[in-house]
Length: 104
Image (tube, rainbow, N blue to C red):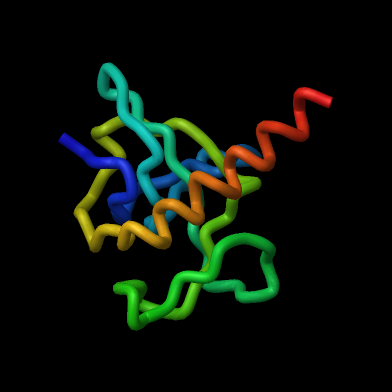
């Protein structure tokens, strides 16, 4: 069972091709073998929530709050680490801000 805030390595298929790559993602929630995740990038120019090597990332990275998608449990390769409580709270706060903008 995956937990919210768990960072995992997953096989991700790109929208514009059938190509897949191994990428880190953070689990937002899981339901019926579908896992909703946020993408993580090492491109520090991207907007999002900073994630440091000190926190467990292989490289300093960014959690992309604008890149939310669903994958299956089968796409999971391995668990990497879990976000601390403060980082997880920041992630959900930022996601809620984005969702609130849709109500306007």
